[in-house]
Amino acid sequence: MSTENDINALLKTFDEDAQEKRIEEHEGSFFRNAPENAVMIERAREFNDVTKHWVRRELWLKTVKKIRQELSRPLRLLTLPGRHRFEIGLYEKEKLLARTSVDGEERLDVVGFEYDPTQFGLMMTAEPRLRELLCGDVLKALVDPKSENGSAIRACAPYDVINLDLTTNIANRNDGPYPPFLKGVRECFQLQGSHAGPWAMMVTFRAGTPETDPSVLETLREFFQQNLEKHLKVKEHCIDRYRVSTAKEVLERHPEEGLAQVTAKWIIEQGHSFEWECRKYRHAAYDRTFHEGRKRYSLRKLVFEFSKRPAPNRQLPLRGVPEQSWHADDLAKLFEQAALVDVDEVMKNMQADKRAFLEKEIAELSGEGTTTDSASTHPLGRAT
Image 1: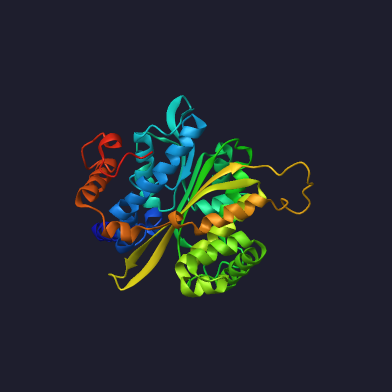
Image 2 (image 1 turned 135 degrees about the horizontal axis):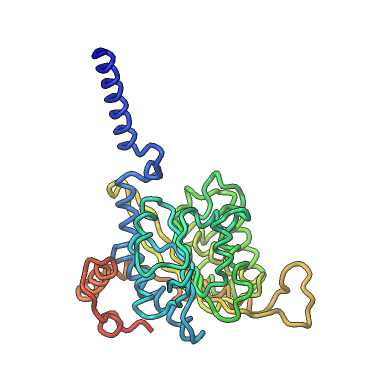
């Protein structure tokens, strides 16, 4: 009998060892899909460094404050907030976000997405709570009609600000001719159909021409060339900016900036097909390094302000929206000198007190620093 008990005890030990091993490997847990430490560090850097925060404050915040002023009410936001919700915290500090009641609980009127399950779990406890915090791929949610997350997005639409703050390419080589990134952007215009006032869209992506599907890049190039040939004003502005007159030359001489520009042009024209005028356009860029600095890529952050501009009733729309004179005016905004911002150059010339302020605000918004009334005292100037 004792021998049998010893065997059972030994088997139990093996079972416990196996369980410990499964726990360590996160077997059966969503932590098994968590990225490697180096990847997590790189992702965290994209959220909490001074370069990214300058974009938040000097581009995003100023745009959002302008929309808030024009609408004369707090705003509804769709975004990818990240672990410390820096963007949301910055807007909330300026009292820009609306509040809504969910099951009797007051929440920020924000729909947030997080792809990484480890970050999602940590974000669930953040206060104040969001109207919806969803775990998954925001692009899949936007384009998949069967997606439960997509249903949640549509139930809360329209939005006053949509921020697709991604770090993917616009079209990976296995995505096909109509990639998820472009599908998702177009779907945003569908979501905004009932919006009666101005609204903002921000998109972020890697301008990696070698990694981008060449067929998509060629299609965007051809589409861009057609506009240059059709609209003299657009061609003149292109020549003023780049000293060349064809889309091919722009992409050859400025491959990363050119990729962002042809993408922005496509986005503006998608807006036109839904009768949205692009009132303002900004294009910020900075480099990222990885593999211990041995490789780099260029991040492009585009900011658009849209407002409704219906087609005149003298024309019956047949295939799409009839061509309007202001369409060319919108496209010419791509080449305005003030529209393009080299953030790396801004960082290089930034004064020490301005950098210190941004670092302090990052610490404050992440809960690691003391609260200050930065809206009125920061050395960058008031965000208006």
